[in-house]
Picture 1 (cartoon, one colour):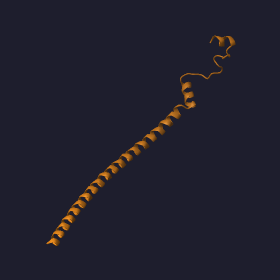
Picture 2 (cartoon, one colour; picture 1 turned 90 degrees about the vertical axis):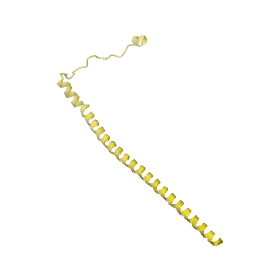
Picture 3 (cartoon, helix red, strand yellow; picture 1 turned 180 degrees about the vertical axis):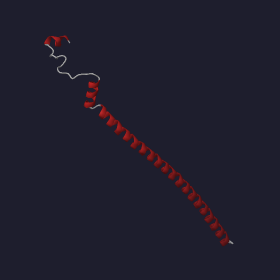
Picture 4 (tube, one colour; picture 1 turned 135 degrees about the vertical axis):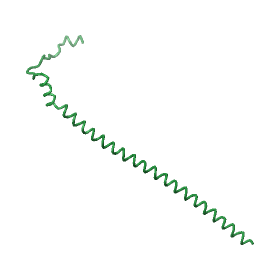
Length: 106
């Protein structure tokens, strides 16, 4: 009878360990699925952000090109001529160095 009780106790312990192992395995699989979903979503966000970055870089390059063409001296000179400006031949005023008396007043 004593051997029979030991066998039943051993079988019950094995069943309990099997149930615990199954529970731990189920929790681990659920956790792995959860982590995989988080990583996949981060990857999709990274891909979207990378595409937006590339789009913004193209836009910046286009704006820099437009800026360089609009701020070129030849274009500014052409617009000035079209608006009626004429080329200056001599300076408007000659700037003289300040005298000693005017430096004292300031």
